[in-house]
Length: 72
Length: 139
Image 1 (cartoon, each protein chain N blue to C red):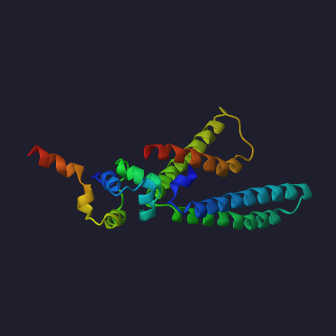
Image 2 (image 1 turned 180 degrees about the vertical axis):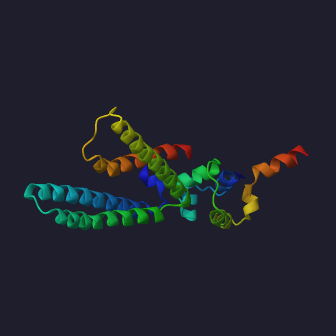
Image 3 (image 1 turned 90 degrees about the horizontal axis):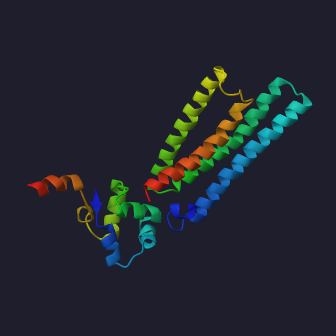
């Protein structure tokens, strides 16, 4: 699963620690989500969407679903 | 490293829980060690050994309570990492002790007296190492 977390965070001038505090998770978790090493649960994804004031689809995208679409 | 694993502002409570775990472990190991030493020295009846072991088990429950509280203070990714580390620990210690017992029966390795005493400390040690190994995957 891909995400725009790093870009959205940079747009707001938030550090990983700032975002971690807003989400009530560790900074390491924010880093793992940003680098795609950890996919958040649905409740956490909703929380991330709420923090950025966006929909989940605007932040996360399904890599596997994108590949066939691009091939067509 | 430990401070970074918890959500900002929760490291103090996490440290407190970690302290609780270690105090409970120290109390449990210390009391059962001293108790067993005294029991052997005084040559007390066998039934009193059951009282000693059951009495000190209260401290093992304290330890479990602290571990559960520690888990609840972690975020979902940290809980997942700890769960993976526990799974590795169960496999390594479980199959490791099984393999050692087989080698003991075949007289390939020496028979360790009171080997069961080492299971808990080894589990704690392996859990710590396994967690560091798991944590690398999420860096």
